[in-house]
Length: 542
Image (spheres, rainbow, N blue to C red):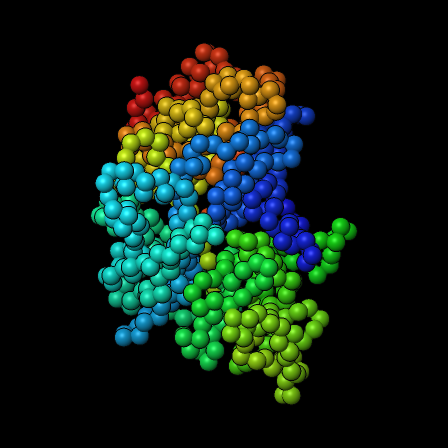
């Protein structure tokens, strides 16, 4: 996989990162001779969405040289229910009677027209408007404390329902080193919807003040990851304000926060005037750029500085770690990003009379940085009345393509997979073999299974989904398969067991494959190989 190492400049940040969020930004190709048989097109590192238009772009946007067959909105988009759980990557443990509430507070976003359809179905069955409304709780999965009831508020302009849990904490009696948040949704009338789990959260006792060695390297902030920033005056919890993007400006909020994509950028501009991004651990003194993953709004490039006792160190080059206090300096100037009330400003720093390598900051210029994670779940029901979702919710994390002769095999690697799931290529459901709770396997359908009209204008891109026939529920994935109308030479076949990993848990790649045409002999050979493989694993196929 080839990842882009170029980022946008200050003047084009919003446009460029907006295209990264909802379009194909980079493309790595697997070539055999002059013909491209397989290409990998990663999308945004953060699959966050809060409006139907975002999902339309996510599903319909392809590379410039591929005409998308999904230019018209698929019917299932109108029936899609979406849930997003956002939270910090680490949480401080509480001790005794002290309660260290999770900061930033975990947030839940519910959107999609499918929720309106479910409500209309319940109303048609005789439920009242109040009974058909949504209610939910968010708590620590497996924890002793009671979950927080969610006060769901609907934003008509954004087309979403939002809630946050501000009183969650992890007790010192809980010995786990990591845990997950559990979101339980139901209708107010008592009809259950399901339980959704967030990403793992690591438990720490306090922010690390030492250099990050190999043992604690996972606590370091990495370029290309997502972070949140909050300001807290004189360590008072009630004064906490989070950095939030409300286009066209950034503001401070006591309740909501923005997940920011952080990239280390080069101090030197490229020939086209853009900044080049760099990978690796973020160190103090590096120039970074922060972009809101939801709106695409970007801050100018800023230099990250270590804050100690109200001063910013100009010489510190240690790695930036979770929950460190940092300052964000305008390069070449004594101005620092600050927050006064709900207004984001640039505050002037003063030289430190005792140490020329430090600058004295105002309280408003000190920020706490913490990594964030977002878990997205989407599903729709094609037939029948609303059905509760059986937990766990199946998710696809990565794909593996392999072949025997001209027949391609697709393996989906993920979580929560079970024997009742089928892999679907668009509307075509394939016979699926359950291997483990983390693996499903099927053959890739021949391109002739799709309408010939779809291939007349160019390659056909087909979305992948996981279907559960017994309750008519379908769970879309963030992957697509692209079928080319051109027949590849018979001698050109993909490499065996070529893995297609995602960049991280919040990455959304799309996979494109060539046309697969196989004979009966080749199919039998593939099935024989599959029988042999599963026999070794004590599985039987018939």
